Length: 298
Image (cartoon, rainbow, N blue to C red):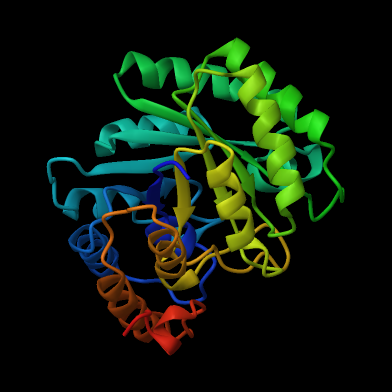
């Protein structure tokens, strides 16, 4: 297995679907604790409509409060040009632009069709590149859609082609937004994406909704991904996708990677402690399993 970078998405994806709204100070503390545990790429905020996602309404305040540490990169999720303007003003290091793979989910999530999403991508990515930012694209609902059902691999791969032809990203993320994917799909999509864009790093974003997230992550590692998203405690979900429960958990993923001989530089014990701390503040149970059983060997 090759080396892989674990990207902490808890401050964004982990919090956006929780009933409790954390104050900015707690979000900053979550980020500080993640850095202390060894995580170096952190999706800290999203610049979306605060009326639709009130959990993310204080993105600017969070970015103002985060520590600036050498080697740590803060990403902001953006969906449209207005979001990019906010991200640039807030001083993010990279932007993550979402393009949804199906029209119905795209309309509900972003208020646009897939074609309009691709056009938005080109405009946003060009401006972000001009500003000197690292720009990744996440293809949401690549493994299945809660409204349209199965998403053919050819449709996702055509989206990869259209995006790379319009404005090549610095990284392509294939996302199982609703947690329906299985390893066979992971292989098909990653092999196809690598043929279309051989020089662009690949990242994957998995949810463990149907208990396939970790199998998918390890399959992705075997097929050349350079980064995997995970959320401390396994918190997370999409407000616009029914039953899209938590992301794969940072501590459970790191345990699997470490035991597989793939170093991550992440301290599991500190992540587990942070998950318990976050659980108290959200009044929501930790979904990760490592905190219950502990690492091995003890």
